[in-house]
Length: 292
Image (cartoon, rainbow, N blue to C red; front, top):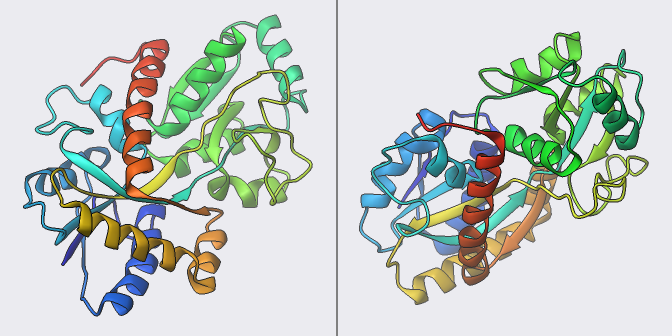
């Protein structure tokens, strides 16, 4: 059985996929071969999965980026929703709005007020056009009416590095990528992107409770199969993923990456994919992005 992870080794998708499938492999008595195929935000490795027989022997570990790619790349040789079924969500990736300490704000309200007082002066970094942090900020901008300038970088580390050095003044990032900078006071958290406060930062309010009512963005990591995979196979696999996510050793690895273990059965996950696909289309339009 093959598991395509269309991202480099060592990243969140890879870490989650390997630890979960290691447990599932032992439970099923089946050997899963991990196949890392990075490139073009995961779209290159996604192609062979879309074309694979729907027999449960080819699976994919992908993130929210899978849906966004439909709006970033013009001629994908597959449809991100119709050609796949979501087998199970594995984890959510909480985000946080952080600012450089030199910015005289400590709350979301103060950040919005400053941005309105200084339109187009505050720079915010992201891992690139169409990345989850970029779209999370685009939604925030739309809901608050502020004007700040997007500076895209090539990946998460340089984006966070820019905010840490003061090259940019703000960013929305997954908590795992900025937790050390926050603890070292090199970045200041002002609001989290989830609807509930995070255990890691219980004193940091949600963006929604800070006046941007209803704001919520929680990128996820999940398992996909080719469309047409039989229901009995999906039921069995989804149940196995739930069992794996309930294991303390799996939860330990995920929480160490500041990821929330989160199982969602295949029916619910597939329905969520359709809903978020439409939502991201709206957010991409708000961001003024153009397809490549």
